[in-house]
Image (cartoon, rainbow, N blue to C red; front, side, top):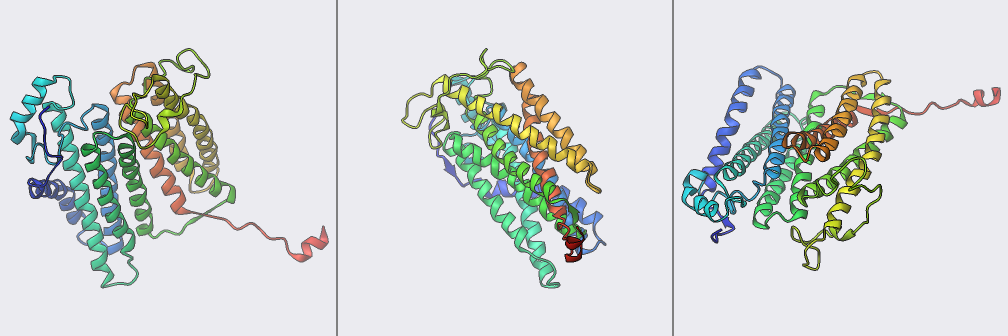
Amino acid sequence: MSEVDLYNLEPLLQLMAVGLAVAAIPLGWWLWRQRSAAPSSRLRSLTLITLFLTFDLVLFGAFTRLTDSGLGCPDWPGCYGSATPLGAKVEITAAQTAMPTGPVTHGKAWVEMVHRYLATGVGVLILTLASMTWWLRRQSRSVSPWWPTFTLVWVCLQGAFGALTVTMKLFPAIVTLHLMFGVGLLALLMAQAVRYQGASSRPVSPGLRAGLWLAFGLLWAQIALGGWVSTNYAVLACADFPTCNGQWLPAMNWQGFGLWRALGHAVDGQLLPFDALVSIHFVHRSAAWLVLAVLLGVAWQMRQQPGMKVAGQVLLGLAALQLTTGVSNVVFDWPLLAAVVHTGGAAALVVTLTWALSISRAQPMPRLSTSSKFAE
């Protein structure tokens, strides 16, 4: 593959125009549907549209990673200094001829650039949301612009990690952080949508509230482990299930958990041994059982709680989906559809738990009166 500048800002304005065009369709639909709605309803509607498209972006990001298209264009923000792979046809053809199965092909270049177009479109929507809240702030002090502004800063950081993913050649820590920031963006948007709805919070038992926070924290840790498995290409390191390469407890090599290292290498620069990949996979698989147990327990409690029964059923369904797709990734040798759905299921779990935490509050424990104590 020929040498290319890692950063080339020449096509930046063209990419921004493409992102504006991508965002124009949902923005136009939103303006038409919400033309006479109240400000809070308009904010909530735009936030939900952005949430939906961000979820699609996370799925397409997984598709980009799983099809090895992350370096389909080896520079940023364009493709060999062009806004589309059409303008880089000569360079891509030369790279594909030199390495027919390498990271740069015409198909992979289009997958990578479509991902960037979608990301730019989501950025335009979030910028619109933040600008709108600041404009409404001038009319009503009840509208807070700080959440949308923080979300705008967050998506800018997400874009920076997207650039580093390319320029640092799929550095595992950077790719995993890119995934985590994308899922975090979903949580931020879901929390804002609930705030704009303005509904009163639903009291739940302190145990359920604590369980929701526990499930939320464990889920984030598990997503990080799953991202680490994917970015290190360790999905098939354990070739069978429920054992791992015929063993219930394989030999563990912790070199794979060195954070700051290049893809396929240990921290000392040596090639990463296969048993380190096995360890990465096995830790993720083992932690999944704990997360699954907590999710099932919380979902069961939610089904008993007035107003949260549907969310509990959704949580049960998503937990079952994660188990099914996770096992099929191993048993059926990492089918693309199952792997993408596995990422989508994790993102959906984050959205569901964020919604549950946002609409609930711990119900105060009843206090025994003094007279009741003496009566006992």
